[in-house]
Structure formats: structure tokens, C-alpha cells
Length: 373
Image (cartoon, rainbow, N blue to C red):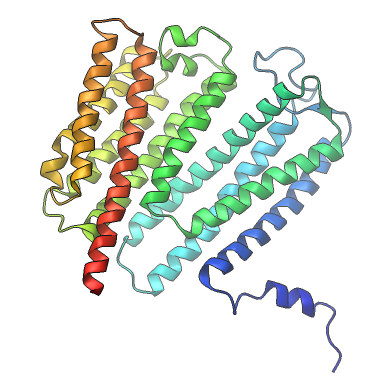
């Protein structure tokens, strides 16, 4: 019997003898290879010809782009966003189907479908802004460098491969802990990119939201980051509600933890929708409301979920006290301006989220261990 020349390849790609984690890694690598091939072909078609800069100049000067308005980072970020969204959606829906077949009730199907839509947007936004930020950093590091079509296409292929690999793994293992790590990471990358591309170097002398004022890539990135981060926090709130049921004897008040967290996400989203230069008072009111609701959530945590580890309640009290202290340093002491308060409040919120999500995971693990004993 003649052996097929493709037999070694078929064996290399077989997943029947692999465990779940090994299979996920293999499929993620294959997704990255396919995405790289597509990115290389599209990159060659679009970029072949004149040399182009890696990224646009932060000040939007005349040398920022070529005559067609294209940079390598522009092409790479658009393709990476599409790749990340497509790859994540496929992986997440496959994972949801396996959960449904297995009869799991940990997260309802409606919640997972809602999460699929919002997280697909998150993946696309994360990939787009991350590639744009990397392009800007490389352009600043290699001043004056321009890439020809082949080099540009290779850069596009690498961006697509990285986006597909990470999105494929994320789609297989979405849970509260992953969402808790994704939210601050995306917010940090988006705000950093907006800061690097800001046309006004004195933005910090007013407040954070100055980054979202006016047009340009900086304003778009800042407002889009708030909108997508709000979606992410709202999605995380749905998972938190189900995880609380799994971790503790939640009681009738526990659902309010997820509801208040979802309200924080909604206010964050609306803060990005209402730009500061369009309706300043409403924008600042939404941002202040977000911090206020979060403080209310922390203050009520001992009553809403009293069976959580005591570390969460200690962290909640510390967050409320620290937020009040940060506010007093702004008004009336004037130690820093509003931007300083925003930095402090944002940092405190995400530190608390990290402690809270790890506590839920620890409580769930302890309960499972007691059940197995």
C-alpha cells in the first residue's frame, strides 16, 4: 500500500491523542499560521510599491503617511482587528457549544451569547489599538525608517499571527479571572496610545478626558477605549454573578454585586460616547457617577456578599477610604489637579477588582475541595 506524501502532515495535525490544553495550543498555532498567510498576501497586494513609514507621526505632520494615507501600522492594525474578531468568535462559539452539550449551567446561554458579541468587539479593539501603539513605538525608535512592500507585508503577517494566536486561546477559556486581567490591560494600552499620539502636550494640566477632545487618532483611541472597556466590565459583571453562586451561598442580595458592577461598566461606556468637548458637564458627571457607584458597591460589599473571604471586605473598606483621601488631595488641599485624582481612582478600582476576582476564585476552590472531601 502506497503511503500518502501528506501522511506526516496529517499525523502532525491530528488532535485525537492530545489533551484539551495541548489541543488548544495546536489549534492556536494553526490559526496563527493561517492568519499569517492571509496577512502576508493582503499586505503584499496593498503595500507593494513605494516605501511607507511604520506609523503616522504623533503630531500628524506632513510626513506622517504616504500619498495614499497608508502606513504599515494602519494596514496591520485593521487586518489584526479583523483576524482577532473572527478567530475569537469561532473559538468562543465552539467552546460555548461544548459547554452546552456537556450540560453545564455555570453561565446561561444568553449570557454567553451576549459575551460573545461584546468580547468580539473587545478583541478587535484591543488588536487594533495594540498594533497601532506598537507601530508608534517602533517608528519613534527607528526615526526615518520606511519599509518596502515585502518588509511591510511581513510585519502585517506577524501582527495577524499574534492576534489570531492570542484570540484563539482567549476564546477557549473565557472566565471571570481572564476578563479581570483583560480589562485593565486593554484600558492601559488604549490610554497609553492616546497619550503618545496626543496633539496637545499639556492635556494633563486639565483632566484625563482632554485626551478624548477634538478629532484625530488620539481622541478616537481614548473614547473607543472607554466604550470597549465599559462593554468588557459589563460582560464581566454577568460572569461575576454566576461565579458568586458557585463560590458561596449567595443569598438574595448577592445579585446586586453584578448589577452595580454592570452599572459601572455602563457609565464607563457612556463616558466614552459623550465626548468632553461636546457636553463637558454631562461627561464629567458620568465619570464621577462611575466612581461613586463603585464606592457604593465597595461600601455595601459586606452586606451584599458577607460570605466572601474577609480580605475582600478589608480591601473594599480600604478602597473607599483611599478614594476619599485621593479626593481630599485634589479638593480642598490642591496637592494635584483633577488628572491626578483620575489616575488614583482608576488605579484603586482595578486593584480592588483584582483582589475581588481572586477572592471569588479562592472561595470557589475551597468550596469544591470541601465537596470532594
